[in-house]
Length: 138
Image 1 (cartoon, one colour):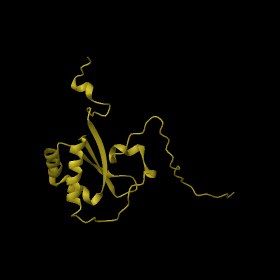
Image 2: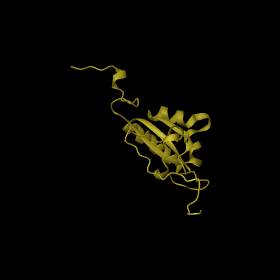
Image 3: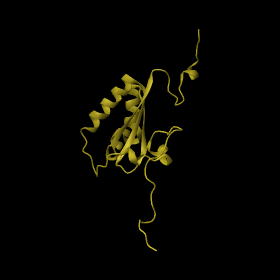
Image 4: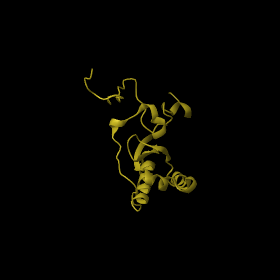
């Protein structure tokens, strides 16, 4: 038999067996409703569902969306998302709507907006930004 202690049950991202991770994008004007005054809604969601969640402070690149990271058992995550949807569907979006386009993925700021960490095979396929125009001139 092979017994593991609790630390050994965690994967490299800190999740235990049976736990999952879900990332949900919400409009930046809705982020405050997910967080609540002084973090009260996040605390309530954690206590009510048992899911862990974090709302990243920065919008995803070139978008008006912020990432909500949820961790826990699948049924707890689903319950938490259902509550978030019920809250947000009653609140109108304020401001421009610019959905996140993965083409603008930026590995340099993933910690700020919650993007996925690239693996060793990652190749940034976004064309490099050019500082100068095109043309032949001479």
